[in-house]
Length: 535
Image (cartoon, rainbow, N blue to C red; front, side, top):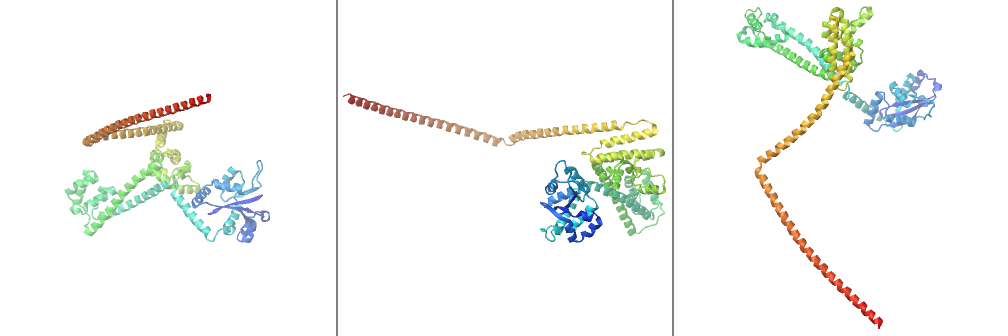
């Protein structure tokens, strides 16, 4: 059986035919030895056809389709033209060697040609790639390298630009930054507490929150200057008058040491930095919430924005999370404990990142594993809906959350939950009703806009009349004068037409009289001729 090789280069498609395979015996080691030598390899593999790409854009499209395992129309026409034709009802006496197995399966499905992609074919294609310059004579030195470089740049740029998961990257970066900010703010605020406690040690026991402690330290500065004037400002920060009074009283009898003005300035600057970081952390959290509502609204409404973002970042993307089964999603983040349990033959973990959800915390100790399994199932459904649905909505996420709440009540009180089919039907009906409402709202908006335009036009007309009475009167007078002039011109034309008609009738009468006289003369002449003939 003959073997043809399809080689996808950066400049076009090439088709090679392998000869003398019986001598080699399809041994990969023999092919490896013959690949480096062009004389030996040229006897085995020969070029049969080459079709260059029309442009760089065409090459990029062909490269994208080959990487996705799809056969384009150009590739199909190239293969049909250059491969031997197969009669109907008979098996082909050749096979096509392809580097990509997905592309080979697609070619065999569409054209019913046998394709193979094994180690032997890959070694042959490696030799073709090595000696491709020598097979094609029209290629100059450096042309193939330029084509490869240009196609590689355009292909990578297109992949980065049209990446399906590019929006997920923003969520992944935001959740990573949020975790690092939490650690940094915690360590920096502890440093502020330790630093300012040398000056005012009693403040640590009164104010527990790190952000509020930094704000209070920034406000007080020197404890010796603390007085009742700071009382309203302290109540604004803390929101409690008793704590503000306690801070003022503690400042009067504080056991801390005095600090130099330079030390106090450094403490104040560091406290301001901590406050700025805490405010930035709040803004970043708001950004993460909005992004999660745009990307994965159902997952966010089911399990929360932070836990959902952690699941997406751990899986790598939303599509990877959607591809994961619920059993994998359940233990995401607990890989170390899983492999440790497999090594030691102990109990495997029941939950990973899902543990941070409020549902598992509300479940009892004996039901935590069952609750984690059920929640992972619902999270996998929500992630698949978010990934593959055309329109984003929170309907399914809310319904799934209701199911989890019902399951919690079932574990605690024994109340039977609703069936999954009934819940999904109600969710689909609600989404359809929302779609119909949106469709009805659109024509109403368009009609309202048209009515507004008409009203604006009608309002403009009387406004113009009130604003410009004098010019309108002058315009009406001019129109009347024009009409009079047109009527006068019409009367004159009628008169001239009547005179012309009279002249025409007179001329016609004269012509008629002349014609009658000529006929009388001819009759007289004829009579005279008759008389002469008679005589």
